[in-house]
Length: 208
Image (cartoon, rainbow, N blue to C red; front, top):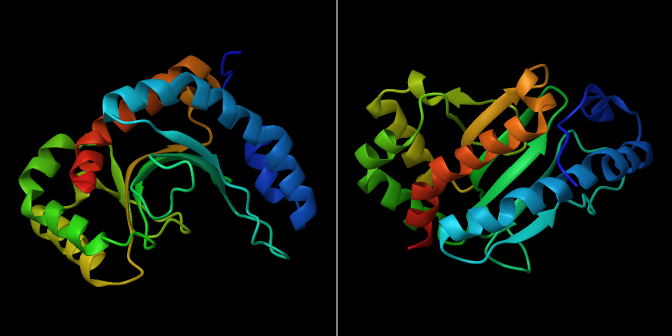
C-alpha cells in the first residue's frame, strides 16, 4: 500500500468537538496513514541512523476530557518508548504537518546534549537546511526559521534548552496544510526522508 498523501479531511479532524469523536477520527483517518508512512520510511532512516528504530503512534491515553490539538508518530531506538530519547516525529496540527527531530523535556541527559550542541554550533549551523525551523515546545505551534537566527541567537536558544528544565528543542520542517506536497504521497515521503536525514547529524551527536 502506497501513501496517498494528506487531505483536508485529515486536518478537519481537529475541529471535531469532544474527545471521543476526535479520537475516533484520529484513529480512522490519520493513524492508518502513519502506519503506511512508517512502512515506507522506518527501515531506511534506521539504516542511515546506524541503529534499529521502532514506531510509536501517539495514543493520547492520558486525556480524559480535552481532545488533542495535534497527533503524531515517532521513530525511536527503544521499543518501550520515545519521550526520554532523541526521536523523529511526523504529525499534524489543524493547519500544518510537522517533521521533527525532537528532544523534549523528559530527556534525562538534556543538559549534556545541549552542551554538545553548543560546543559544535558552527558544525550544526552548516548542517541545517535554510528552510528548517526550530521549536522550543512540542505542545505549541510556534516555530522560528533557522535563517532568521544569527549565531548569537542560536547559541542563546541552545543555552535555554540546556538551562531551563521544561525547555525543549525540535528541529525540522513545518508544511502548511494547503501546500501541494502534502497531497502528493510520494513527494511528501521524499521530503520527510530528506528532512530526517538532514537532521541526522544532530541525532547522532545526541546519542554519543
